Amino acid sequence: MKNKELITRSLTGLVLVAVLCAAIYLGAWTTAALFLVIMCIGLHEWQNLMHKVGLNPNTFGMYILAILSYFWFCGKTLPIPWSYEAYCLVEIGLPALIIWCVLFIFISALFKKAERPMENIAVTLTGAIYIGIPFALLNFIINPFSNDGGAYPNILFGFFLLIWSSDVFAYLVGRSLGKHKLCERLSPSKTWEGVLGGLVATLGIAYLWSLYAIELNTEMWLLLALLIEIFGVLGDLIESMLKRSVKVKDSGSLLPGHGGVLDRFDSLLIAAPTVALCLWFYQVLYSL
Image (tube, rainbow, N blue to C red; front, side, top):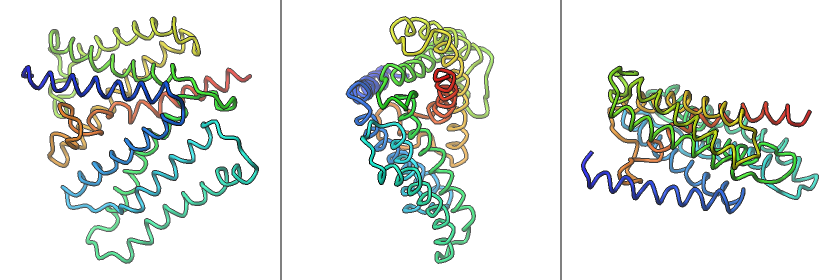
């Protein structure tokens, strides 16, 4: 990587980290707003990728389905003073709208003169699920103890800290010691040595972070580090597979030196649902 490219990538990364930290530590509302915007940008990149292979996702249906799902998760975790009517809206109205939106995507295909309607429906639903749900679940990760109406920014920041640690150390170790390719047909630069180096570093950082972020115990942080390493790598490979299938290097150009939102957050798309599920089990055991 050339020095100019490295500087650009580093500066973009620092700005992104600063924005994420500010949003997370300002509270659950700013976190929800930021990731709603990022999710919508990711959906736009997904739509552009599908256009490159001649597919046309239902733009309106995909955005509405993703946004409704996002609001549904937010409604369960944000500190909102619920009235009975508002509670019914979230618990009954939003799920009903989500189901109707899925049906709308199928119905609207009847009135479009598309040669590949079922494929268009498939990529519409896939975009909303693959991109929308992981970003929505970040609102649960910041407050896995959703019954108390609070926010735990250290948990969500720790999630990102472990993802960044995995990426950085996997790159450094793989570049200096990597010999055995992890999955050469999808990502020629990734090596088993890099993955192992990323895992060891991430476990170490998880232990150190657990000494400060006592909302979760040390064992839980180490488990999350293991899950983030495994499923973060899988998320990265899945994104590489998708980009190769449409013959592009980057999903977009919004982030100089990084590419698009999907390029920067690819590890999150698989890791976030996994971590959210793990934290849900932890919350259940915690409440017993």
